Structure formats: C-alpha cells, structure tokens
Length: 288
Image (cartoon, rainbow, N blue to C red; front, side, top):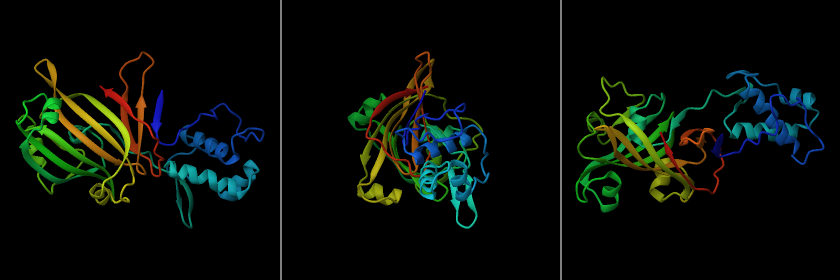
C-alpha cells in the first residue's frame, strides 16, 4: 500500500478500464481525464521526455472542451507528472528524485544522486536533557549541532537541525564544517558507521521567519516537519547516532509510506513533487 502526503491518486481508472470518460459519474470530467492520462504515464504508454498530444488532439479524442483539458493538465503539472514548455508543447516529466526519510547522516551515507547539502553552521555544545535522552548520553555531554540546507538544483527543499554525539561519527565531523557545500552521493573510501533504523514523526506546521528566509517561501507558510532519530549498528546491537528536526517545503516534497501485507514496519520516503498540496495530518513511523 502506498499513501502519499500530497495529492491522493484515487485509482478511479485502472489499466484495464476503457480509455473514455464516464459522463454519468459524479467525478468531474477534468479529474477523470487527468486520471486517464496519469495511468498512461505510470504504465509506460508515454515515456519520460515523450510529447503528449496537443490540447486540440485531447479535446477531439475525449470529446471535451479546452477548459476541461487545461484543468486536467494543470493537475498533472502540479503533481510533477508533466512539464509544459511554452512554444514546444507538453512532455512527460523525468522520474522524481526519491530519498528515504531521515537525518542528514542518511543523506550523506546514502546513494541518492543530485542533492546538495549546504552546512550553514556547525559547532560543539552541551547536550540538553531532551537531546541527551534521545541520544542515550548524559545531560551536558558534548554534542555536535549542525544546521544545514538541502538543495536540489537551484531550489532549497529542506532545512535540517541535527545533533550528534561529539565522538563516534568519524569523517562526517570533518565534512560538516561551516559553509561546506556537499554534493551527494559522497565518495567515501569507508563508511564511518552502518545505519540501521530510523524513528520518524511527520506533521504539518508553519515556518518561522528565519526558516522562511532559508527555504525562500513566505513567512508562516505551511511546511512539513519531520522529527527523526537515526540509529547505527553498535556492538551487536544499535545505538542512536543523530537526532534531527527537518522542515520541508510543501510545494516541493511529497511523502510516501510503503506498508507490506505481512505487517512489517513501514518505510517512509520523500520525493520531489512540485505543487504538492499539504494535508493536515500527523504520523509516526519506524523505517528499517
């Protein structure tokens, strides 16, 4: 099962359904049309970079007005399924970048290509009781606090506030220097540690003035917030290695939770989804 925090794909149209609109349905024609076009994209009838039929051709094929076609295409464009290029036409968009939900340690040690992590600030400080409890260390122990901004292309996507034990993160501390710009994936000769599970809470909120400035969105604009604890393998078991709060732009990111039929722990991932609409919900998951 896949549930996305963003536009919900209803499944009203299936691969076996007729390639036509149901005019007796309560579902608006424009929404039916975008479902049909979405199915063609998702089932490979059109490949990334392929041109879609023109608005005139779609009007004729489905016997609908230009207004209906434009409304359907607007939804697909907001969902990141298509790209409209002035003077050229409408094209199937390239697949969205997808990343496992977690802290910056998972970004740095992962294999996803494309994003860039800009370190805004990095400094040692004493752990508060709350952070100490989450990291499993004594209050007042030395920790490394890192503020960083995730960019994909020119667009800021997420702002991270991460806390690590001062000892034990190896080469990552050297990389996470103030003003560092890190292009992912990293080319490391050896990984400083092996990540295991992530405990993640996801909710909606409104950004502060500083968060708005960093993410280049309006003050008090809606955002997704994730609260995460990353764990690493340690002495036959595991221990916390990072506590992070991340603020994501709702117009750039879509979350998905994959749950297996046997009831195993769900896996949470995020992907770019231009124009995704936020939902007022909160969820706690543990990803393995």
